[in-house]
Length: 266
Image (cartoon, rainbow, N blue to C red; front, top):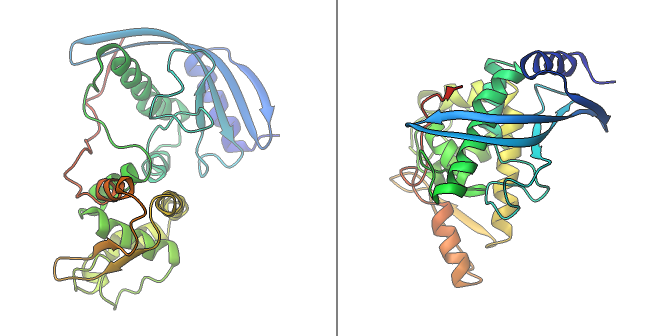
């Protein structure tokens, strides 16, 4: 039986979207729903019919819901899909922070799922994104945390590594490499994450970066400098790896974009 928070999330979604086809999977409730996207951004209205599958884990909202499509509007080679076909709605930390502030599943649906569907259909129709595009995979994760911490990507990585390892100490130099004591630099943000459910999501995002980087280049060497940590590989396995490394360790001023202006729903 799904747990109480998941049950409440399910009831809220039914109230917002109408009757749903509910079935229970392993440790999660699964809904199959017809959904008509009808949203407008920047004067461009998009209307499209979808069949959606929403999986709400027993641990919701500490564990993130998954959304996928049962129709074929979005092709499987669309870059913001995971290998299992579920939507890449955002970085784990970003989604977790939103649910921490508001665990309402309808609010989550409106903020992330509607935005995802609009963006995907817009791209398929016009060949561009309506308001910028964060990179997929590890590069996009680093872009998000660079924005969150106000750093470049290598600095964001070392802060995430400190959180994931549990080695942060406020009296020691900040893991960002600034040379300032942690408590006087990123300490407040780091402790806020360590003392909340965000730690779990940061660790998941850090594992994604580690796993993806191992398929490109191994090992990475981080060293502090006067301008924060720099990252250089000891082994380049191919020119492709070189370009991927350059992409993933680009500064936070690259392809990342802020949250879009709210849609006009019809």
